[in-house]
Amino acid sequence: PPTWRRARPALIADALKRASARPSGNWFVVGASRDVRAGGRPYGRTVGGVEVVLWRTDTGELRAGPGVCPHLGAPLRDSRVVCGTLVCHWHGLTLDGGPFAGWEPYPVHDDGVLVWVRLDAVGGEEPSERPAVPARPRPGAGVDAVFTAVGRCEPQDVVANRLDPWHGSWFHPYSFVDLSVVREPDGDDGDAFVVDVSFRVAGRLVVPVRAEFTAPDPRTVVMRITEGEGVTSVVETHATPLTAEGDPAPRTAVVEAVVATSGRRGFRLARAAA
Image 1: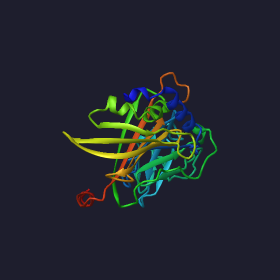
Image 2 (image 1 turned 90 degrees about the vertical axis):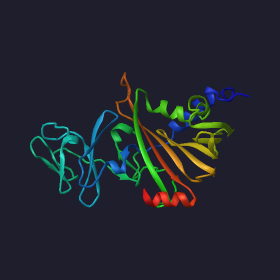
Image 3 (image 1 turned 180 degrees about the vertical axis):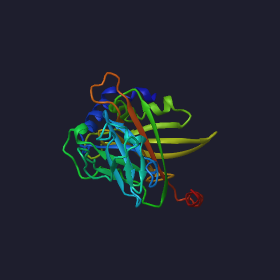
Image 4 (image 1 turned 135 degrees about the horizontal axis):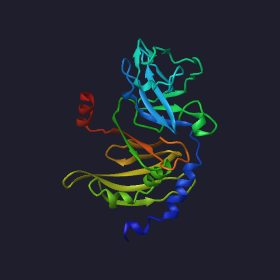
């Protein structure tokens, strides 16, 4: 039967409800690790209505905190980093990443692909020491790419979209063909959508795989290849709210991280050249 007959709204809503109930530890993805470079400019992002600034020291250590200068409110994302210290471009106030004059740093984590910041006032949950980073191909075995887009929606809208695997064959025929859901989530240990799908490469050339979709936290959906070409490769979708909760015009950053691997010799050569 047509795939849309199986795409029951109640099934997707239940999967979303279970995802929303999982803890996040108040961690939010703010961007790609490579976007925050040692010796580079500060990186700014608004998360849940809170301005955040990130930068690296000369040794590559990550720092994060409020994006507003504690002196007169200058936007610190427009400042510069000198010898690993953030220097406000208005009056020269310096921040080394430690507490200063009411400016309190935020916990931050670099997982090698993405940068996370913990905002307890925004998340409102019991904080955790580190984010729950999804399992990925072993370090050095894959290549990664990160793409960010901003939509007029809430994070749960993004998660619900990704937890509807059927829509791929209808709205993205240029990428997916022959998609079928072979197992639906049951709410227990097997709380995943399992699909057989062929990724369109070029023309009639396709790559068939089996993949599973899971939601490890309220703002993340992970597609992991479990059989076929590129086993253990993942596509992570992270939905980070930009506006405060209850904003009448919500906006969400959709951060997609692809970590791909393959046993093919050509892939190893391409990875070495990347």
